[in-house]
Image (cartoon, rainbow, N blue to C red; front, side, top):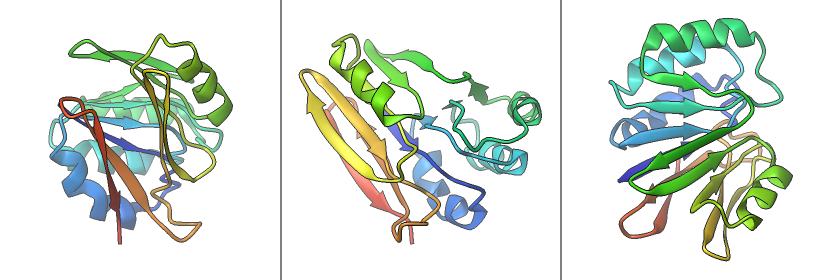
Length: 163
């Protein structure tokens, strides 16, 4: 299974469009927060062409009610609130926005994959048996727009720079 992970889109619809082929060719998408505006949810839902997406809130997500309404309209996007606990083929996954929460979740040993965002920094670390992963930012504020694809069969991360 290929799990695409993104975070901190911050309304950058141009980078999201360029990332879409990678996202739409995955089996599932995880978004670690800071989508920001409802129009990004619509673009995401349409561009994924039915690929399921799981989204958690970030600190810059504005109109949460409208974001949730757009996710419902898309039909393939689930809004989880501040935290998502998921399972894919026996792999337990936790998703949240904040690094300190991500690190604590990884340290619990309860998950095989823990994803977070917020600090806009691409990061990958093994914490015991858990992969702790920040896909970086799609926004590109710090100069690089990145996303990660986690291959559950290989147990490896492919890093993609979106230009």
